[in-house]
Amino acid sequence: MKINNHKLPEHALSGQRQLTSFHFGQPGVGEKIYLQAGLHADELPGMLVLHYLKRLLSQAERRGEIQSEIIIVPIANPPGMAQVLLNSGIGRFDLISGRNFNRDFPDLAKLVQQRLEAATSSEKETTPQQIRRAMADALQDLPALSEVDALRQHLLMLACDADLVLDLHCDDRAILHLYADPAWRAAVGVLARFLHIDTVLLSQDSGGGSFDEACGLPWHRLAAHYPELAPACMAVTVELRGQQDVSHSLASADAERIYQYLQHRGAIAGVVPEVPQREVVMLPFSAGEIVNAPASGLLLLLRQPGEWVAKDEVVAEIIDPITDTVKAVRAKAGGIIYASRRAPFVTLGAEVMKIAGKTPYTGGGGLAS
Ligand SMILES: [Zn+2]
Image 1: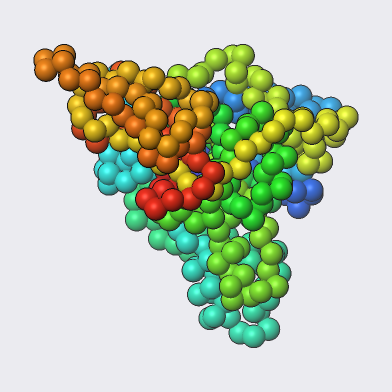
Image 2: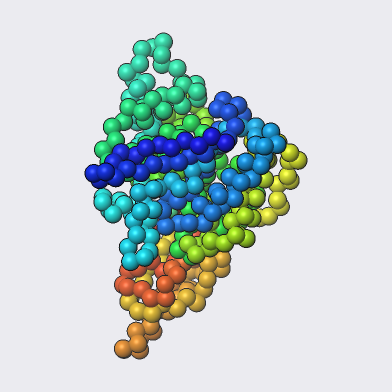
């Protein structure tokens, strides 16, 4: 295992942080696989999973079983880790810019396109290898306008030329689920089975420049200009349940499942495990809804993550103990509740839960991690 420390620019006078990546296998041998956790720095389950996975990979390395390049970044957001307020981590939004840490990644398709247009006709090749090289060169040339911009560039530099990217997140309170590009539907089904994930949300371009889409989407965008190009990077956001779901038993089991999936892909030698038999529900992202609070008050969930609910069904109540009003909270379109609020109170308009149905509807979507 090789350890690389990537220095970030000083965020303040005399203040400098670094991003640490762990490398297994050899570049150019087998596939390239990239896993990171904690891009939203207050989402800790994935960090513990990668702690366990790193241990499994180190053991495999000692046995000489690593057959692909595998990169692990257990803490993808050192600046976010440092954002602590009243003893709680505030890791979803950058407190300097107010922006979500999982947005605003550079558009590699645009950057590569510009380079290809400027290239002479003999240099203008569009094999996957050349596109990957152009992506890395374009990122190298980008100016880092802030510490967080530099962080985004470093993360993309590590991941943009990978065959597989797993970005580990979690929700407030949630079942295991993942977000993926419908172009990879079949392969994602296999990944989901290995990870014991029964709910998959499919979306190709939800907007905003999230990390997974920054890795996978450029191939679709470039294919519009160069039809011979096929998607070459399966980038998936895995939601490892809720923020409080940090335990030895969950994390070691998740790491074991990822390890078996990597064996299935041929990245690690050994007896290739069978694909687990379980039903995976694939739902269009545009059929998702966020249920918002119609009033402020005490929140009582009547239905929980993992349950299917019908259109207009009452899923929660909000109680005002001064007026004794009990307000019903209803699902608009219905579907499976895959995430919910943990705190038992809400202010008007706050998110109560996330539901994904089978049929897209007007006003659906917009729930990316
Ligand atoms: Zn997240």
